[in-house]
Length: 57
Image (cartoon, rainbow, N blue to C red; front, side, top):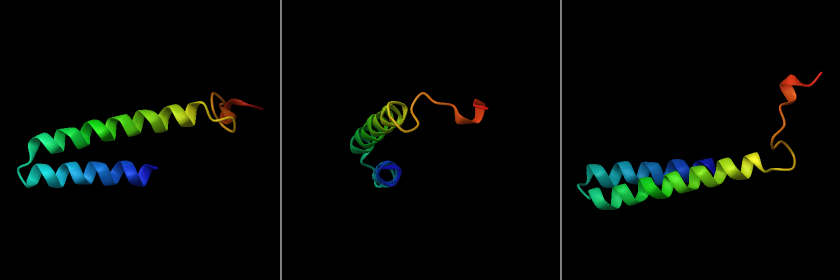
Protein backbone atom coordinates (compact mmCIF):
# COMPACT_ATOMS: atom_id res chain seq x y z
CA UNK A 1 0.00 0.00 0.00
CA UNK A 2 2.84 2.35 0.82
CA UNK A 3 4.33 1.76 -2.63
CA UNK A 4 1.02 2.84 -4.17
CA UNK A 5 1.03 6.03 -2.11
CA UNK A 6 4.57 6.84 -3.21
CA UNK A 7 3.67 6.08 -6.83
CA UNK A 8 0.77 8.54 -6.72
CA UNK A 9 3.03 11.13 -5.10
CA UNK A 10 5.68 10.60 -7.78
CA UNK A 11 2.99 10.94 -10.44
CA UNK A 12 1.93 14.24 -8.89
CA UNK A 13 5.53 15.47 -8.99
CA UNK A 14 5.95 14.46 -12.63
CA UNK A 15 2.65 16.08 -13.60
CA UNK A 16 3.74 19.30 -11.89
CA UNK A 17 7.07 19.27 -13.73
CA UNK A 18 5.16 18.72 -16.98
CA UNK A 19 3.07 21.82 -16.26
CA UNK A 20 -0.19 20.05 -15.45
CA UNK A 21 -0.80 21.68 -12.08
CA UNK A 22 -4.45 20.79 -11.66
CA UNK A 23 -3.84 17.09 -12.23
CA UNK A 24 -0.86 17.26 -9.87
CA UNK A 25 -3.04 18.74 -7.13
CA UNK A 26 -5.63 16.02 -7.75
CA UNK A 27 -2.91 13.37 -7.36
CA UNK A 28 -1.74 14.98 -4.13
CA UNK A 29 -5.30 14.85 -2.80
CA UNK A 30 -5.55 11.18 -3.81
CA UNK A 31 -2.23 10.57 -2.05
CA UNK A 32 -3.58 12.25 1.09
CA UNK A 33 -6.75 10.15 1.00
CA UNK A 34 -4.73 6.95 0.56
CA UNK A 35 -2.45 7.94 3.44
CA UNK A 36 -5.38 8.57 5.76
CA UNK A 37 -6.92 5.26 4.69
CA UNK A 38 -3.69 3.40 5.40
CA UNK A 39 -3.36 5.09 8.78
CA UNK A 40 -6.90 4.16 9.78
CA UNK A 41 -6.42 0.60 8.56
CA UNK A 42 -3.25 0.26 10.64
CA UNK A 43 -4.89 1.76 13.74
CA UNK A 44 -7.96 -0.48 13.53
CA UNK A 45 -5.94 -3.59 12.74
CA UNK A 46 -6.81 -6.39 15.18
CA UNK A 47 -3.17 -7.44 15.19
CA UNK A 48 -1.44 -4.21 16.26
CA UNK A 49 -4.06 -1.51 16.37
CA UNK A 50 -4.22 0.62 19.53
CA UNK A 51 -1.49 -1.55 21.09
CA UNK A 52 1.89 -0.35 22.21
CA UNK A 53 3.96 -3.51 22.57
CA UNK A 54 7.07 -1.52 23.49
CA UNK A 55 5.29 -0.43 26.71
CA UNK A 56 4.13 -3.92 27.72
CA UNK A 57 6.26 -5.78 30.24
